Length: 326
Image (cartoon, rainbow, N blue to C red; front, side, top):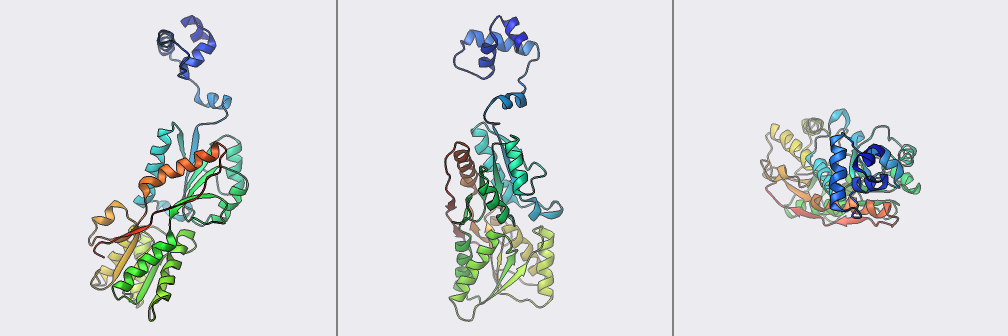
């Protein structure tokens, strides 16, 4: 910077103002400094710059890889959510650091934050990490979580009303005279547990209705299809299926079809998320909509509030059913 200042015949603070796009520099001076900097290949060391500032301008976005073992992070929903977060961060001129390694517990998150690896965290999916996230919140680390919203969690979350989603699925099944309901998912995940609980609450309102739980040990498409196929081969005959996601619903449809069963003739089916392919699948999938178009912006807004020293409140997004062929 000293060399650039000398060659442009200005002071070092002036060079700094030009490179930081300060309005205190005249257009003529700005042009001269930038021309000299470009001619001599000068670029700001961004990491060094961050050390001099109170913030890094970087947000770490964490995906729930633990829930998608063996590289099975293939659900379009999570990438729609990630795209929304990325767009909102770019509008705020924030850098996105995607899932830095080694952050396996609250202490690791805290150390990474204190080492100025990121100003805060956006966590896409609670998975089975609710206890860890509660511990992280007690340490005062700025974070916004996509997932189940709980009043006593202690951290800011944005998500749909999963309990209501389960009840809506149950109402849909009851209206179609279905009495043997099946939930497909892993209720160790708080979001999925609430969906299952909502389904059971609705079932309890109607005599003669039963709910069976089919645990999924992997959220991969193939694993879900194999689990449902094995269940059907063992004699399972539900007349309604509530799948934890639209991709899981697609896997279930394939497994049922292999047994000669089709929706909606032989069973009703409800998915979750309302990803774009759900409306074009054959048959098109009835599903619970999650507002990914606003979720990304909300997550970023909630996190930036915390980074600025304010307290951010959790938000439940509108939750509604999209009725299609299944």
